Image 1 (cartoon, rainbow, N blue to C red):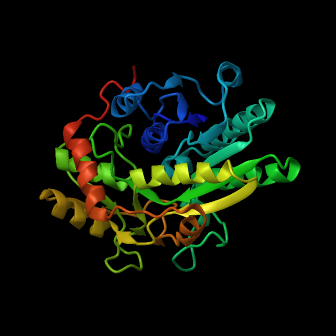
Image 2: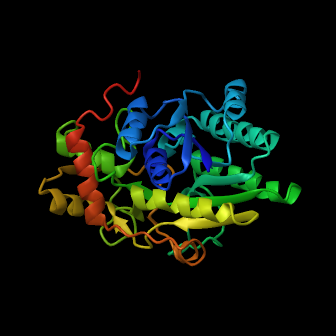
Length: 340
């Protein structure tokens, strides 16, 4: 199949493109490189010995997006593209609503125009807000606590309306938890702009010496050690989940939602300790105040994905740390020319 991958040069998108190419799919990437690098596309090709077609186009550019659909015979779409920082979304909500929701509307309108109805959507566990208990199933109440999460929730609601209006639509919504790790080759990994918002690149940048110490946001949560607990999942496991979901949507119509997580919760300090064990590098840290929109505990019940998609996370926290460090140590400055 010929798969259009929006945001395909990003952290999760690039790893998913590698897995798609390994399964002999054709890949067309669209990315505006706002938080990614053209070098990741070169590395995707290097890892797979296959060429990918890519466009430097913003989803908000409807004419540019139309050109992509006009020039390529697309069978299915995997939609990653979007702004993703919880903290920034609290500070700049209109930017997030405009970019994430409008970009998705442009995409699905063009999909309908070109009679493409297979879609895998990258959602987030943030749509669950602050859950009353864990593990979280897909049937939990949805109540996002920050603008980023609300953009995902609004998009989910839009997507749920599509099969009602047109039964040709086949959609998988993937709510995934906290992706970390990197490709085992060390050629693909997480390379955020500026000071990282996510835990693992913050840890690895401290380990490489780019940052003095790790800031841990809050040590007064109702958890075993006072730090936030999350379901950390290896990015390659997550990428493979998208292939399983793609196989599902091409087989049947309608819409389904799946949690992609390990089903295990690790605190921030758990991850720090795991990184120190796996790399033998000490990570200095300090506690600072909580971030707006953060919650105490969040981890998945992934049994529906295992039952219906045949997918299950395989990699543990130590392997996640080892692979993340291999990427960072081999690429101290990440994709150095990410702005070219």
